[in-house]
Image (cartoon, rainbow, N blue to C red):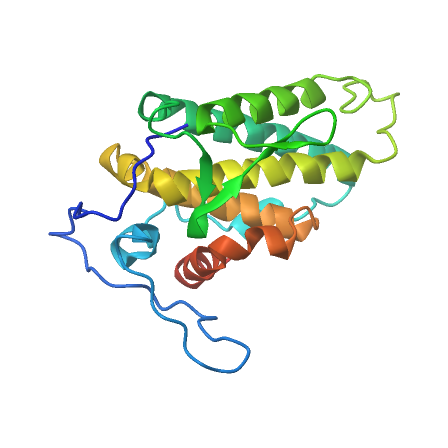
Length: 235
């Protein structure tokens, strides 16, 4: 995955031609109606209006996500899951030169949450971001190429527990994207890939919520980004 840096120093985005401010993000209230402290721009640069407002095309990700008339739901979920995996894996690979076991000894997400891999014995294991990416992408690839899980023959039915497996895939893919935003965002900007990342993330989250594949508890660390993207791109 992409470059991992600690953005607690003085590194700044090039915002000379951008309006440097947070977007109008809803949901900045606690249950007791006290206003949350606004995170620093260093901590969440992906919320800068000049970045969060950009995408690669004016597309309706809601329409792209809804099940087309006459199409089998499981087939629609399968084709989109495969597409999301390929695109997220490609995006992550494009930033692989920046992410090493030295720069990313753990896999961090928004709020400095640490994502752990769960091994075959059910034990949670802390590992570097590159190793976590290798584990997750290999796991997903194995599922997607398993004819008993994602059958390619029209005569073969999808297995019981299919939705649960798709939910597991979406969980791992969301964590990959969360890691990109939290620790790799400046590298994404330097490569001028943030419009692509925003578009991919917006489509992924919209599809995941359309078919109940993402838990709110899992997406909570990036709810501010989701709200900002929704406000700007109307999805």
